[in-house]
Length: 76
Image (cartoon, rainbow, N blue to C red; front, side):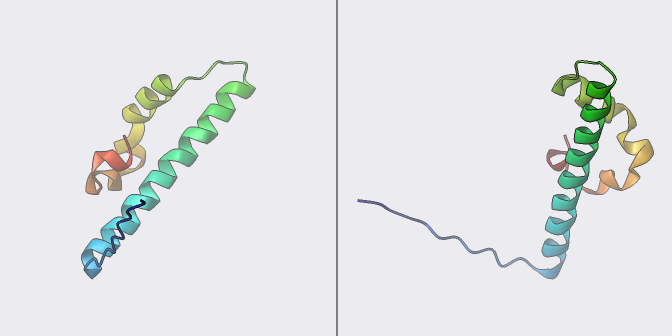
């Protein structure tokens, strides 16, 4: 027997805005990491996730101050 649960979110306009910003933040960070990975790999380096995470954490608030408005789970 298969059981399913269907959950519908009905966010307020403020919550919907926050969700959109959090998703955009995750996409921005992913694209930054992908670009940085490609640059390091093309330069003969061996990039790894932990090094990229440390590199991003060192510069994130200088380059992207709006990240302070989004929970860190979206960009950590």
